[in-house]
Length: 422
Image 1 (tube, rainbow, N blue to C red):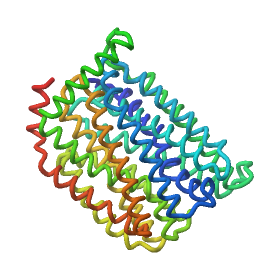
Image 2 (tube, helix red, strand yellow):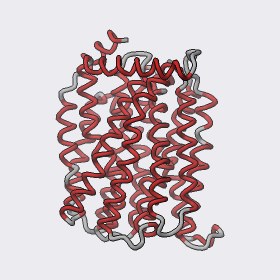
Image 3 (cartoon, one colour):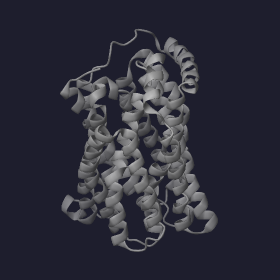
Image 4 (cartoon, rainbow, N blue to C red):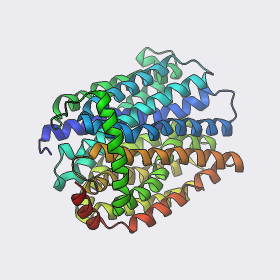
């Protein structure tokens, strides 16, 4: 593992790079543009259902690919190469949204699915590089640094893009719709540009000089062995189950919050402001959670964040005005980066040395499998009950179940078992 500050910051700047997609596209403009532009003549509950299906379809592909891609990357020792491939896929597909015309919701959905695959696949290999750039004693802080820079970078670009939509003539654009489409191009370029430090300055351990065919064969064999190891590594397995449940709730709130706000009658400008609030609150809060993890432990930090999320979900079911959405945005900003960064650093403690990409393949698989179920759950319950408020309320069970399982994880026992399995 490295202790090179340049490598740490270069690694963390990939979060700055790809969080532009998570903020500008996934949480911000795509759900608004999908409902108000690409699905102009589609009823609100039906477009919510479509958005849930779209997010779930993208996540399902990642679920199927993540474990084997992680195993192959470990075999070849080329996490950076795989990361670059997926980052380019995501950036190109995001830029492609610029050319989608009004009413073409299906084409927008297909490009978005491909972009999410690029985003999620890149994150798999990015996460797997965490224990390459950071020694164990600083891993909570480094993980939090990545998420903190992600919130700041995504928020800065999103601020400029929002300005473009509010004053398009200042940027030589015709109207707000063109400004949103240009924002997709800006996001793609931002993603590629700020991925370069990781490519140039993060050094992996020497790669295994084997061909792709042998790596695939070895990868499948290693995948089978890892699955057997996960079944034996009881604490790792228990953590993964807990993570699967609670991150489902976190990701679903991220992906569906704007759609929910529109459906209960809030103005799109209010929702955009709320997203900006979350980003800029999230930057110092994520950094602070890194120190909280070092002080009280990552498990306790995650449990604290989940308790806040339960309160947020209860509050959101009765929300009816913009100021309440702003308040919710502040609270989410305080804990969102914390639960993500501390989960990642906690899992790093529970995996055998030298198998990070493969184990993070399972980690990302469960995270994205949760994202298959969560948006569909909200979309289905919303459609069944004809109430967006009932749909969002269903998320609370995921936080309760995930928190209960996390309480039962013994981190020390998990670390000892992972060391024996190395």
